[in-house]
Image (cartoon, rainbow, N blue to C red; front, top):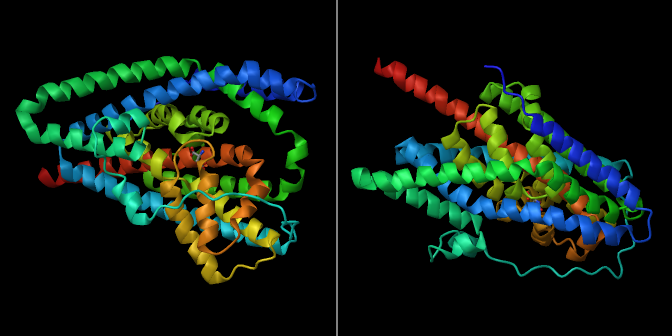
Length: 414
Ligand code: ASP
């Protein structure tokens, strides 16, 4: 089937260009930053607010309706199991790749010891693994929806779906209600997405004005290594797996993902990009009931780009402090960065906060984060793009695997 044209992608691209050019024009002006922050950024914020508003009902109703249409709790378990395995393996590979690239950069003399006295960074209060697990389960039916605690919202929607399935005939009305609300919020989402060319322009413009070349200069090497990692990971892992397991050509995949990629790049928020990721992956052949379960979960726990950023920054900061990391420490980083990516919220800047946990695990001074904090947004744009691309690759692959499984079951029955 020929893929439907998506002219919106073109307009989002134009929005991105207009925002970048606008930023470059405003940058040299003495009041450029004030204009960007005072008059342009608010429109970007309105757009992001609208997306955030629609995300909770979308996740709630789309996961529940996905579960209902799977008609079988064990099928949800099987999809969930495969999803988590794909997410964990690709994230662990991402950190590994980042450590290899950063070590090469270090041996080439691109990362060097830096002046570190006077750096300040207060690490956030740590949370034990057990507390994190306990916090996934809500004690209140409404609070998670109000606070947009995504993992708790996912648990609520799964339980809602299971309850409706188990209620059988008596659950029919609830099932129809969920389906109907799902459609309604999907339509609201379509409306909001129509604003994306303007939203994207207004989001990217202040970022360009704020991150002029002057703050980037000392950090070109670490930025470049992170971006090489992002691109390599996307090209190697997603192209290969999408082709081999999802039956979709890499070119078709990246082309189909263009609107979501541009949105992620300008918003630096996986959760804010979720409506785009859903739409793009469905156009790429992901089944709605699979995508609506796999993608919200991915936007919350699957962060390959964040893991790459953490691996590269760990080596960069260690080198800045004159510390050489042992193989054991590198393995610890693979483990902690993989776990940290689960705990990272899909909002701007969250990955930098979790970097503190990764550094602490191998005794690298957390104040080192101050070295890269000034340009976190630039790292974040790339890592969010990788994060959502990985989620979509998983949705396409799991859908294909489910199709194959259904075909096998059908063949066995006949
Ligand atoms: N901004 C990223 C995301 O939304 C998370 C991060 O800061 O790494 O996926």
